[in-house]
Length: 247
Image (cartoon, rainbow, N blue to C red):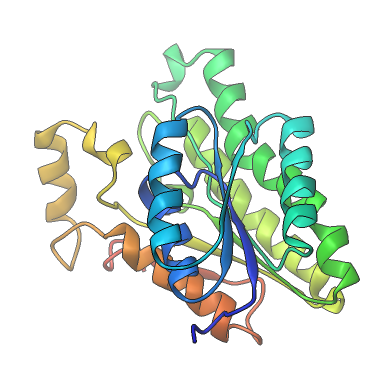
């Protein structure tokens, strides 16, 4: 029996990278998992098949979490399909990198709306379900780049720093409803998104990580499972999974 047997979970942006690892790890520990994706149904289907192979139910839900109506309808669908919603992992995120003098309004708005807005839309939709059962675990995936300067990522850094602040306030407001809210701030992690960074820059980044390597998505996923399974007395906190790159 897994550590979170019988729990239900929704992972946004769950078709690849960190989100995929989180969805699979939650299923490995016994949860029924809903995997949200924005457009790549084929990748999402791969995750569903991997979860099904573990013997757990997986529900695929397409939605752009940056659109309030889609995000809230998605949460409602998952909660109604599963009968309850215990865990929400706000992982969906995008980048639209540009130095500030060249950053467009569209680049700014799209990143803030998806990364930070999506976190709010999904959380606010999940609150009634979790409050009614006096239990909920909300884990928001931030980033080390919400804690330190990140050249060319003013929009991304602002969204991820905002998630950290949002987490603290949400935790304070929801604690008496039996809902804990925490954030995980990954450092540089070996994902498709980071693979697009030029090799020479990757080498420079790696040289500044005390552990001398990038993180693995599975290491972020294990931190999520810890908060769900063992984090009953933890709320409003951030866990940094970054190899010592930011202390």
